[in-house]
Amino acid sequence: MDNALYVGLSRQMTLRRELDIVANNIANANTTGFKVEELMVRTEPAKPARTAGGANPVKFVLDDGVARDFGQGALTQTGGDFDLALEGQGFFKVSTAGGERYTRDGRFTMNPDGKLVTQNGQPVLDDGGGEILLDPLKGPVTIARDGTVSQGAERAGKIAVVRPTDLASFRKDGDNLYRNTTNDTPQAAPDAAIHQGMLEASNVQSITQITKLIEVSRAYESVAKMMDQTSELSRSAVERMGKVQ
Image (cartoon, rainbow, N blue to C red; front, side):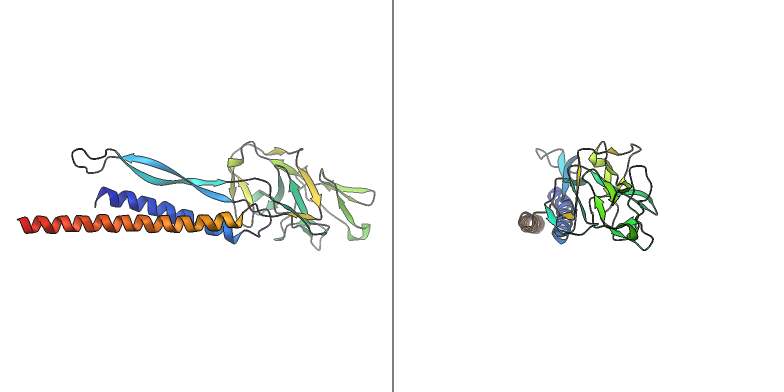
């Protein structure tokens, strides 16, 4: 196979992956706390078959992971007692069957046992690593900017808000959760503020992502056209050589 076809195929593979990521961004434009993602690519030199004077090495395009923009999303008013939005760099800490996970999705609720939980029933953890227990009979719940949870004059706990040393260490784990991929323990994020009765919207800019979707689709078509032309050139060359012989 011609080198140009190999290079084109490598680019098509990354474009296909990028198309999936952009489509996922658009699908999550209204997901609370979702952070926009972007494909990273790199080139890899190789020494394939070549002709005298031809390019060497040839550079192929490879998928080099996904970059995530943890920039602030817009805060929207909901009025819900258990709807919490984070302003600043930080994450809520929740307990799951697989261990501690982290999220920016503050759509919390109180389960029948009085625990503060996520939409999927996972307990929200306090700054000591324990669960937050509430008593419906003790009146409305007030949550301060620093995460302190109160019912009347009684303190029920303090919601943990943490941040990793390196944001790149957080990987998606499904259900709008992140997991820590290093042995470093995320530390408290005192600069992050909690807003009760609000939610953080996705930081996806739909117009930008739709534009990118069109650009990626056109790029894919251009590469496919180039590969078709290269293949046709090779076929014509072989036919002419056969006629000469």
